[in-house]
Image (cartoon, rainbow, N blue to C red; front, side, top):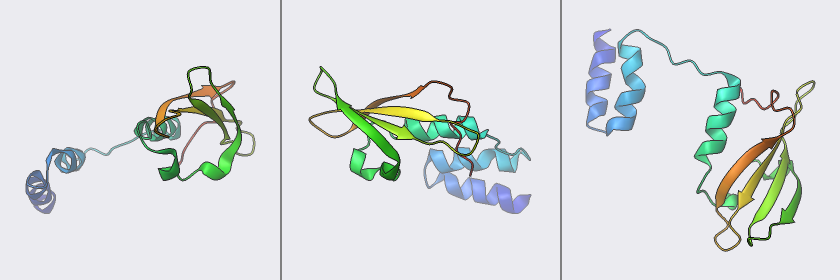
Length: 113
């Protein structure tokens, strides 16, 4: 336990995000996130990223231009028995992701670590 506390205290010098991640470990708690929450968090962290920086481009099943000049890309993230289709909206000028949403039954939209 002392080693964990020392690690947390030394991480404070590295910046708050690392310290905040390690703090539950020092308290004896564990971080738990469901595969569904992980999928949502993963998509949310991509907001503002350039489309070329995102690793699942092979899952694109379609795209279409939008009236506002942006473009929508549709992805199939399905696994056996778990359908999942989601859409990213990408800024037409910058190529950055500005929004995302799921379509249809999104219970299959999971990302297991």
